[in-house]
Length: 572
Image 1: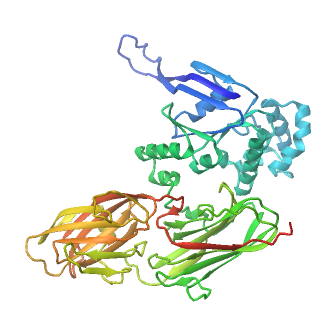
Image 2: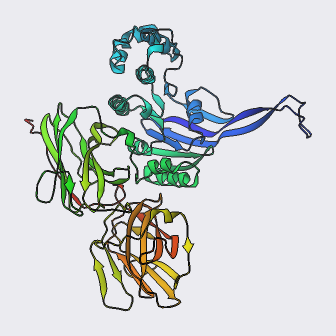
Image 3: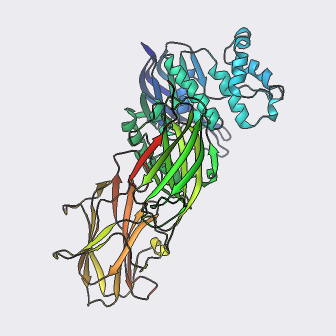
């Protein structure tokens, strides 16, 4: 059965502009009159939504999402087309609409409930449930102007969630309250799904939309430009974000690969606390408890937890961040195909062991979490809580300690270094901003990106061989010249760089089984003379390449790892 049918829906707004001077033209109004221009917020929208389905609507700001929900809610009417609604509609679009600051919380429950269509007898019946859900008992005798914004949102959601409806319209549901209250909201929505309610959800949080929705519609400039599965629509959405002028940090936050942490949340413990992480320890390759490690050492993190009640489905996650917020790696047991079907009441632990923590020397942090089955909320989430250090010098702030090989075309001999051990560090981050050429006996004649078979390529999968073949022209035989090659993320994070004495007119830098995760990267080259601070020759972003990871792990680099856990013993 169809719950909603939209046929050729368009919505036009007339935008008025005050004109103080004389407007010339055949239909120009008199001076001081208003000029109206048309703006089509929605154009030829066609949708058929079956009863009991959860539909996501995504799009950039101004794409038409809110206008569409307002039409479905009956707040406004379409300019053209026809809308068929089969069932009673409840909307969580403007939580707390009609609240009065001078009235108490209790008085506003009755006032707001009447505005959204509930009779007084229905409110009386549901009053205690609304109060219990809002967690505001003890504040209801206080006037609303004493409430924080979060408390107002709690009250508004609690009222709306107790309405009788067949179709629920929601806008940015993750903005309601703290983590614990968000979990209650999602529990409520899961309950609606089980009751075969139809839901239309809009959000900028692509992860939430992907996990909740059966089908997704992507709006752009008021039109449906893509619809279907989350994977297909999300990919198109990310393309639009890349094409837009939105800040890079927002685009990265919406992408499959997450590259930065919000440091403001570090050292916080969030979650609904049905399961509590009570202790986290880290161990080195010798099994000694410590938070100081050698480069490329085997490292194990172990977290002990207590479940205060049985949880039907969950998973464990651990993430690594550099001290400046750069996201190194963030797997979890769900991504690795090992979800936890049930956690009984009691004590248990989980651990992750990294075969080789291939990060450059520096200060880092672990996050540890127990998530729900869909990673919409955390039972317990210790954000950037556990500090650790990798010993050594890292003058130029490289992020990764990658394996690589130097190869000379046409020669059997290969110069292998696994990983970098040389002390020569020529690159200065200031040189990232410009290309430079000084009087130099060397010129770069060609740079090619190759796969393991020697074929030219710019798109690679995580774990592929990446070869950077460089060809030079020597105007005279160079003396004490050094070549530097650096790999950067598209946001200019310095992932890895190596250098060697430049003697051959062709050289290949081979990264076997490159473990970089999904993202855009680029290569820069420099030629230095020994003991000189500035490069003789520098080429910024001389070539670009893409990496695609076939899993869901977040971060910059894949780190080989093994999960272990012991769940609380159940008497069932």
